[in-house]
Length: 194
Image 1 (cartoon, helix red, strand yellow):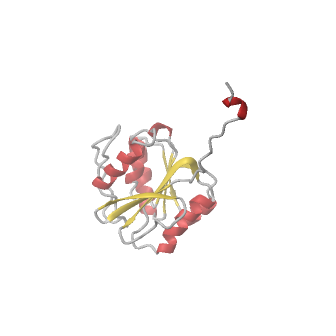
Image 2: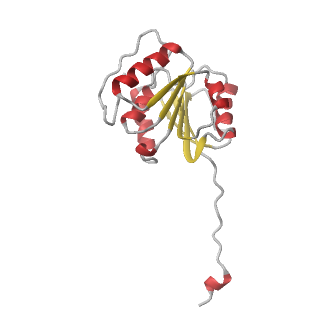
């Protein structure tokens, strides 16, 4: 696993072989961060990484200057590896061992970017629950973005706040943003008088 851009570009990170993870491919990571790069200034972002696994996505955000980053995973081996790597690189990442759904229900913080990479085999209703919890609990900032990585067999475009998706081979990123009502532009009568 390597960091593909930012301060630590090219640095390799070697997680233990026995962790229960399916890391996002370099091609997918590069494509994702190209999209984010066009929409955000990384140094100003508060990031939440759900089902963080080895922390691959968190390290990409940190290498680009994001802080703080909260990385949540239910596996103690993954969380311990993230803690070790975070100390090694002096990243502003807080790894948390928690069930993701429990974390979302209890969280009081809000974030500019929420990234979730659940197991591809997760039930559709659980994918939907992640989205519902994020928006019901108002965990996403007004101009923020939530991204869920999933297989091409999972469809999330029926969910409220769905914005668009990008597919790369068998992997798909679905993007969600708060829907803003377009304000009507009105003129006062006296503004039109000359």
